[in-house]
Length: 249
Length: 372
Image (cartoon, chains in turn red, brown):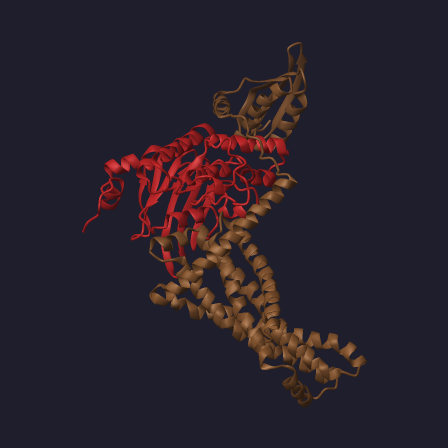
């Protein structure tokens, strides 16, 4: 187990579900500070739902979650301790890209307008969207929306970033560029990144660690470095997942 | 000194001003950092930001330093960032590599530009509307030939939503309209001893004008706005495209059922509106004007003819088609995200209300000509 001060996210006895339905049953994991951790699994195993619980948008049926030592509910009570990129980007359609990023800076910092503008522009530069600051979300492509959403998630310099399917629907070049951006953010800014994804190429390229969820056992069936799991796991599902094989009978 | 604080000392020499920072350069210190450096960077100033004792820096603070470095030249000053440790130096390099001149904010269009643009938009909207009406007419024709293309199963629920669910508000508003008309007209009529003609005024006004018009306005606010928002959301979330790829024509599948539903509902609601409007007038007549129920009904039989009621019902059918077509057209031409849906809904309601009044004027003139 990771030492307490090095843990970015800690979940204990975490049970997720609705009514009598249990999606994930008493799972426990730590995600180390500074890691890029992928949450993996087949469709419907609860990856995105787990992420929604980690960021405090939904409450677990049981157990505890700590984000940098505090419950994730603090998301509604003050400056968010993390940035989130939703699958669709979820940019505010009535605002320019610059205004999308400036929103959190204006709310949570006492920076004056020129300083906020400098920060917001630098965020857009970081995701290679320099020159698009006055564009509306409807005027840019899907890949650009995803990058803009990452820029918005980075607005407050969070030390933790959650990304839901960041490269889904992107062309291979945009997907690789996005992977490189995540590595840069992790290495240069020291951001801990949690990614929900299916994209194997991206997983092998960026993730130091992964948590593989399983629908049938309603728990975690594999944990560790994705390349190691691909090469060494004896579990049929884990092997099939990482090697893109059909499960058969 | 803890890691959470940022302090600095200012010193001057022949080489310029040095600000020696100590501690952690967090975004929380950004405002002070910006103000301090901004104040130093006057014309001719040579400023050094010494980060030798800064342990850690947020990306936001580094972005500000890089922005001020670039801006210093425009002010005739220089800013040198020195002494950064390895981590901060990597951040500085990352931000310097990716700095490009900001693009100019698009200029706000002038008055004549806005007028011209409005004219172009109005022309385009009118052309789109006529095109849509034409396609709807063609679709109605082809629907007769291939009824399976129509989503008949949606019609009962559309009728329920637009009709049954509207009855309480239609009843309440039209009762009050009838009562208000009677109250307002009672004083002048009383002066001439012509109380009984309140029945004529309320009866004809409600049956020919206010019943159909008020009901159409209520349905515009409830169902028209709902249709525009519903189809607009489907449009922006690519559901309309998905329908097309499955071989469905949105005109058959979405528009036709809505037109048909309002065509069934609005005349029926108008008849209800006429009835309760007269009841409102009757209530005031009995309570305030000492007219008996029998006298009211006897006068009503003379004053309000079948043609008065029929003209209102005919208008309501035309209103129904207008409301449904405008709402669907606005919804299906929605662009953008949530803001686009809002704009379409507003535009549908405003355009429909304008069209209803214009149509009412046309019908009034037409019925006068044909003596209905």
